[in-house]
Length: 54
Image (cartoon, rainbow, N blue to C red; front, side, top):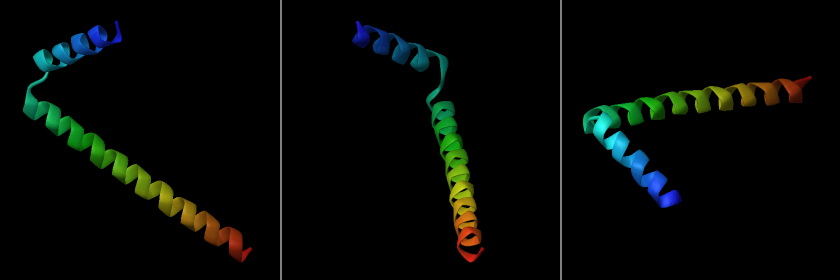
């Protein structure tokens, strides 16, 4: 049953999105995720430094 659902979703995505658009969306998501992770890590480092020096 799960294989049929996965296959159906994969077929719908293949029909609805062109490959270039899909690749572009994947890269956009990767960039945004990377930026968010960097901001969180920098904020954590600043918070730790403030915590140590107080």
